[in-house]
Image 1 (cartoon, rainbow, N blue to C red):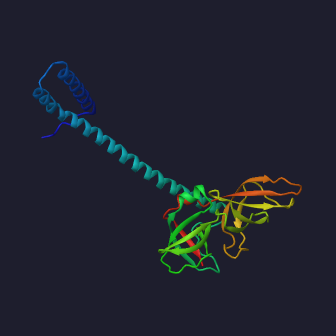
Image 2: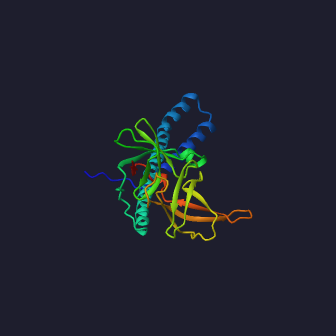
Image 3: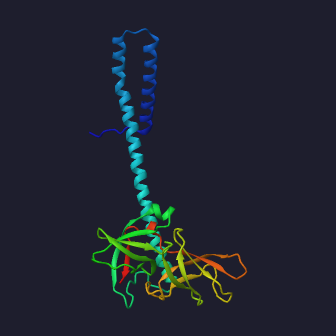
Length: 265
């Protein structure tokens, strides 16, 4: 025998009627001078629909919370996929292979982002992520990249995780260049995804929108890796010419959890 489903409209009607009936009888029980036994009987009689209403509201609330959680997870996955696709496009635009982790003169070790110190990254001067790898005893001060993109350098190993100091950390320095022959030593600004360097030569060639690469001069980062894009130039006060260049890094730790990185030993 086929069971007839109750429509949402009928459920709403029943719910409204039950609420109305409970209110009416509650008013009646206090308006009429009923004895305590009669009042208890009415309370017991109509406690059941009240419990049903509470249970229905709780089920709806639980369903909505689960739905929101599911949608948030799907959004995070989509944002992560979009981020990685954008890196692939940027790598192609700069004639690099995003997935190419083979750099001559280095032993390349696979690793995965396992942790991210978000609190210090947003508010403070300590920019760190943590990576996991199957290789023991990773040395400090080794370059780490995501595909063709600079990430930072390795630090201490704690409980099978390698601490990585991002290039946006103010204690980090990196030698960079653009395609026009300008190069400088950049330093982390403690601002998420940003480094900066100074120029005191009026003959130097650069413009907002230029992509910067590693020079390899610092002995840490392999030459030719993609660093970021020049997004701001400011004039410094004083009698001598001096400009500060601010480069927006392509690597974004927020979208890199569980993503593959490479340690260049």
